[in-house]
Amino acid sequence: MTAPIRKLRVATTSLAGCFGCHMSFLDIDERILKLVELVEFDRSPITDIKQCGPCDLGLIEGGVCNAENVHVLREFRKQCKILVALGACAVNGGLPAQRNRLDLRDILEEVYVTEDGLARGSKIPNDPELPLLLDKVRPIHEVVRIDYFLPGCPPPADAIWKFLTDLIAGRTPVLGHGLLHYD
Amino acid sequence: MKTSNSEVSAQANARGARAKAARPAEANNVFTIDGREIPFEPGQTVMQAALTAGVFVPHLCYHPEFRPHGSCKLCTMKVNGRPTTSCTLPAAPGMEVENNTTEINDKRRLLIQMLLVEGNHFCPSCEKSGNCKLQALGYALGVMSPHFTLFYPVRPVDASHPEMLLDFNRCILCELCIRASAEVDKKNVFALSGRGLKKHLIVNAESGRLADTDFAPTDKAAEVCPVGVILRKRRGFAVPIGKRTYDLKPINEQADRFKPLTPLPKEEF
View (cartoon, rainbow over the protein chains, first blue to last red):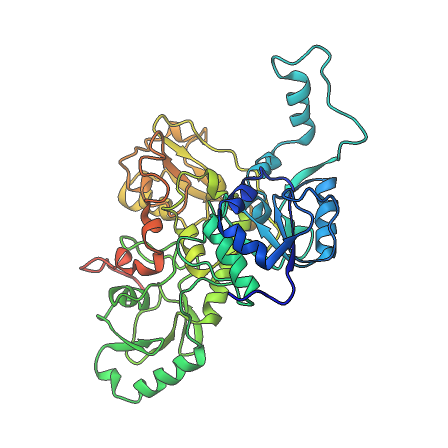
């Protein structure tokens, strides 16, 4: 692959995810050296940049479980030309969405008030700095428009590599058997 | 974004099919799928003939040991220009059938996406992953997202039976367990209840619990579920993820698995 005239700017974030997709991304191993010849990173856990600037590509791990997730997701949509749902949670809510059948108040009561072994006087956290939880965890395509979906828990490093190299080369990303996984 | 399976353009197929149909195919029991000649025995459905000839047909409610059901619609093909469920349509000489085309596969992708949002399909925590037909068809057809708004329905599991588990979250209403339990096991353990969006699988006991039926792990109904509803307890990972039926080869390369039995089960059309 020949290097583009200008390096593509890439931002990544983890919303209601476990950073497993980011770990899988790092599992491309030494290919990351090839990647940084083609791209540079904007906001990402890799750079620790806190605000997203104008980008060519945004990778979103995790679904949307609180108000801050919605805010960050909208910031990414505003700044990124192409936005990608990376991994099962971004695609359909994933593991965090398992709480959707439960009442949010009941969950908080059980975790912070009624559960065995809590410190005396323990109560539901109510600091104004804490983002408010949504009553349901939602996949990101229900909040903003998403251009590409890359399923998997996590998507294999080879799938992420195939996806990125296809996209950077201007091809429609094609995964095929073995790389397309919902689990 | 699509997987690498080749979908031919409908136009090219129709051209090929017309060219072949000019020959007197009616004399022989032959029709064409995507321009390819498919022989059939009288009484066979389009889908049975296709599978016998090694042509894969996406399906969920079909099972070679049961009469066709025609409910999942994934096997829909265009027969002489009209969309029809190929599992219920008797093959006839000279039919021009389109199967693996972008137009039809787009519709199949939509059907799968609608199934994915109606239930709770979380593959990472499902024991059936790798053996699930819904998942395997999603892979084969290149379904990359649920596309629609997810329903997140509330469907409690039934773990009452000592050996079997029912996870209704994944039910796609194919009725295979209902048919197997009624026709083969003669037990009538399962049924559908409710209408429209509220339609759901129920257990035929006063308590509604599987433990209060005579259901057994050796029943036919215990092995026909195409998704992960009816599961044997303590066996979930006997075959590890990555070594399962559709991990080894994509489902569209396994047409042989679904070939009809000979002699054909009696059909009533």
